[in-house]
Image (cartoon, rainbow, N blue to C red; front, side, top):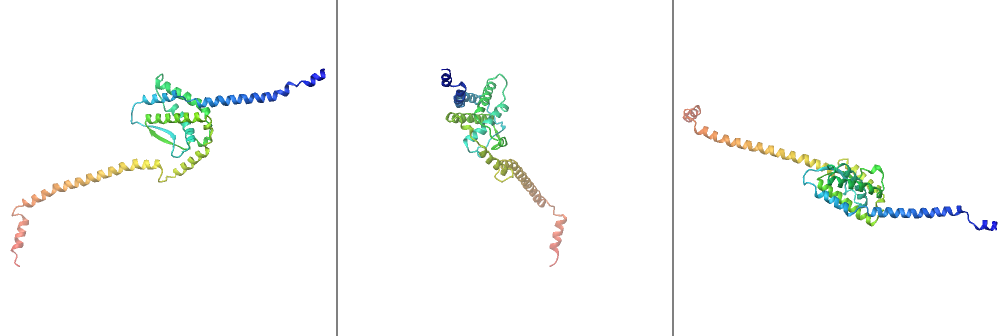
Length: 257
């Protein structure tokens, strides 16, 4: 009976491997489900309302801020655009959006920073060598910058709700295309927008100044000529009869033919 009992029992170690595998599968599924729900619902309407409040509380001004952002003309892939824009927005919120402490705008900025930190887990990192790819310097007002940031969060929210794993896409090929375009632009081609803008701002004021100087010179010479012509006429009209020139003319008349 002892032998039969020993033969009929299964050692607990034989069930340990499959049980552990089953537990791991269940845990991984639950974690994946939590992550998917976590990313899909991380950006709420409240965050968009915070951004809108920041926009509404800004003073209208023509002063512009300088910041780096994605050049959408180079990067037309919407997923890769938002993936690149997210990390840039994170830096802008941290370093560019400064408000006095313990104010509604400062508290709103802190909430956006916390959101950016939580969202980072929903984005996979690409090669660090592509960090500056598809990026250029912008000059916009604070209102325009906040509108741009709100659009990024709004579009990110919609894509995450459709597919929580959408930003795991590898965008290195798209970023590499931007890098190759940037190298061509550094050669100083005629279609480079930065060079064209620089030439426009440099040449146009110079041309205007030259035209004004030439016009002023021509006007001065014209006024001077008009001022001298009456004096010349007066000198001929007021010349005395006994002047040496008159005597010479009389002598020439008296000469025999």
